[in-house]
Image 1: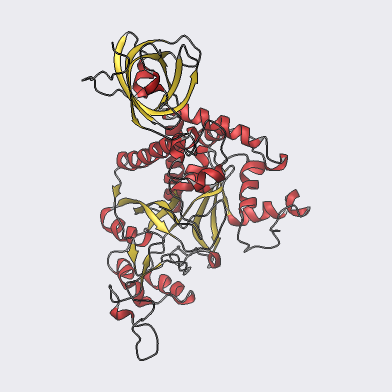
Image 2 (image 1 turned 180 degrees about the vertical axis):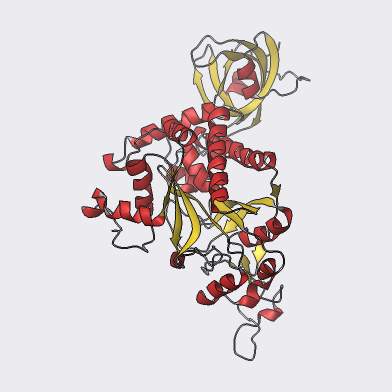
Length: 490
């Protein structure tokens, strides 16, 4: 074979994951991927190739008597290759098979002087600056494969339970949470807006003829579907114009929101617990190699933290902890009593001291209940009505609502839900108290006028789930292209 030519082959590409799993030797294959590393000497080159299908690299052995130096000089970290060769049992540790290259084609070069992902450790902060390239690292390829697995598991769970997936609008006139933290959508020229007689911007001349914004939740529209179809769920992007530049907040994220007709708060909690256990079990059963890598990464990261901030359990242990434990269910009042009498509260170790009933629980309180007090996942129910949304069902005490928050180790709240207020008069009274105009959501009120029924649902922020399952500590690292204050790249 002329070592300066490329063999034209009719072989179809084999994914590296398939090759490593089969471990079949003495066959000729064609593999394609990106170079992670190249090492060797004048007698032989060892190329670590990865195509994104697995955390594991495939070792390509290149003999300079077969593969010319002219080709090998362009085999640098980041370059893309097509390799034809024979699969043989590996002589080294760490992999069962390797490829003896018969032909290598450099599909796309990567200049080693400018390619930013050289074979060394890079900080997560640096990788966020080049988010378009970070999927080529082990950490982020593992996260994105895990993210795909969780997306698939979400749809499989609800499909197998007979739920219908509903697409709710991204552009809406409503603010489901009543918080006012919305991104406005308009075609009006900000330099020359039309004005009405009151001297205000005349939104009747806007594209939709009214003020509109990006959705903060698909829940209200989801309720409309549930009150006709029974059990539904939404899974889509949501947007919050909350100026929170923290490791737990995004301006654009994905929400999973099931709604069930003829269901009370107990049904809601049962579904949420079953759902989260299913997702965690799916990850443990189907993402073993990626989880093992992320667990090791998380363990190394923990060593650099102050002792007080370290997790009591490793990543795999935390996942098993959720899968294997029954969730503890307590009322908000019980939670407040526990927290008020806790050592961290009495010794003022909490940043937010719990003094009285009615306090809004913070992450430090939630994690104390889960990790220190009960040592299992916790669901808190019956929150004060004054700190919850207008649509939550008022309890008989007239002080609390039939709401629930699910708390996980290391992350605090991961799910929030409630039984919805099906009584029209009570719902309208709550809207008046919270100054929500009736004419803005008259369509929503119709569901309480025509065949109303008890119904319940919850919301799970998908990136919060990804934080827990991946062991990452910053939410910007579990979504491919994070949107945060002052940051909207790509």
